[in-house]
Structure formats: structure tokens, C-alpha cells
Image 1 (tube, protein in one colour):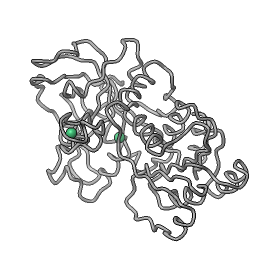
Image 2 (cartoon, rainbow, N blue to C red):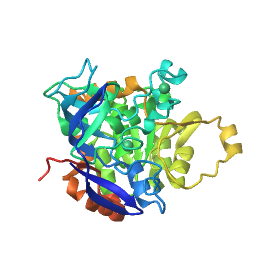
Image 3 (cartoon, helix red, strand yellow):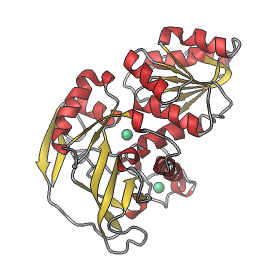
Length: 345
Ligand SMILES: [Zn+2]
Ligand SMILES: [Zn+2]
């Protein structure tokens, strides 16, 4: 089968991999769609990708849906032909974090499962554990289902931040995670959502997915103060990973408010401790999602209780994965979520 492998810095190749059946407790999927994630872009752009050093296997892709083609010995609840969305980090199920329902912090580190230590879904087929497979209703949209993983990230960010739907929420950055945070806030019943984003194309996307106010960063504080009688927002989510985005969240957050760090970046952020103390700000960094949050996200999308399709900008075949990475890296700002699909023409 064909797969896209990361073989060096900014170097991807289409490789032919042996077509092996699922082992005991495993499920083999024909990949329907797999989203290109910002974290994959980070690794692609890194001067020394872990995969090129042999620290991780070379096929990325952890945001995927697919049809079951075969199940291994001992698999009980998944059958061939079913539509499935894969949780790349379902946890080991046995460690203290998993027992507490915090599989994102699993001691076995299995959040880095499919697409990290295990071959990912920029490929025709992918094999996952039964525990990782969430079976969807047959009429679910496989394309939208591929956004379950980043949608679960967005829901987890708001849940960890203690978001309540009556609060004024700021989202900094309208890339895929920022857009999905808006959709997630609405799925929790929220309506007062201010998005700050420097790029005009992304601002219109934020409007499309249901933000109540969308502004350029320079207008953020003024807008938030106007909407809150000068108090600021109760909660801000940085979905940019950039120091400027985090700073705008700090500026826009009310005294006693919470700043949620959801965007992964590679630049350090200088924390103003005095100001944080005076305003009694809470900073919450978030990672992934729990297994239950993943299942909830899958259901919301599959039942069309949320519409995530505006986040998708393009579908490309597996063979075009290297080209999609190159384009995202050049002009990623103009693209939203790009999906890789073995079925795309
Ligand atoms: Zn991702
Ligand atoms: Zn565990």
C-alpha cells in the first residue's frame, strides 16, 4: 500500500509498505480521510525531524476516519464494513491517569500512538487497537468525522478552562484549532465569542463558524471592553501558539479570569508575574482530550449537532501529501484544514 513518509527536514516521499493484516485486538481500516495537523507541520518544518532520526516511525497522520476492512483475533465490538473514527491516544486503560479518565496524560504516553510511534493515516490503510476505534452510525459523513480529533482538542481546552456558556470568550487565532474552538463553544451553548485574527481570510472563516465578533488584534481589547462594560473577558483561549496571541489573551482577560494555552508554538512567552498576580489570572495549559471527550466529539459531529465542514478547505490524494505539506508550509495562512484521502481523484 501507498503511504506518505517524512524522511527528512521538509522532505516527504511516497513509499510502498507491506499490506499486513490486523494483529490480536486490532482493527484494520481503509482510510477515508486524514487531516493535516499543525503539529505535523511543525515536525515537517523542523531542522531535525524525530522521524528522520528514527525516534518515531515515518508515517504521520492522526486525525482520521475509515472503513473497517478486517479485525484481529479477540475483537468484539467492531466489525468489517463499519465506519470508524480513530482515537490516536486512547490511553493504556490501566495506569492511574487512565483509571482517573485522564487518558491524555497516560503514563504509557500513548497519546503519541497512531501517527507517532505507530504508523499513521497518510496512507491507504491504517491499523489501530479496538480501544482506539469509535464506531460511527453508517450515515455519518466520513469527511467531517476526520475532524473529530482536533474538535476534541478544542472541547477539552474549553472544559479545562472551566468555560460556561454565559461567559464572554476570546479566541486568539483563527486557524483550524481556533475555528474549532468557536464551534466547540457554540456546542456548549455559548454565543458571546470574540475572535482575534490578523488575516482577513481567516477572519471571514471565523464569522462563518459562528463567532459573534471577529476583529483584527489591534481592535481586540477595545471590542472586549465595550462588550463587558470595561471588565474584560472571563476566559480567553490562545489558539495561535504565538507570543503575540498569548499577550492579546492576557490583555483581554478580566480580573479573576482564565487564560487557556491551547496553541503549540516554539517561541517562549515572557510571563508578567506582577500583572498576573494583581489580576489573579489563572493560566491553564491543555493537552489532547480524554477518551470520553473524544467519543463525545465524535457523536456531535456524526449526528450533525455541529457542522465542521467550513473548517475544511481541500481534499488531496495520498500521492499529493508532500505537495500539500509544501503548500501549507509556504502559504499555510490561506489554507484551512487539508484532508488526505486515498479516494480523492
Ligand atoms: Zn492533530
Ligand atoms: Zn494509561
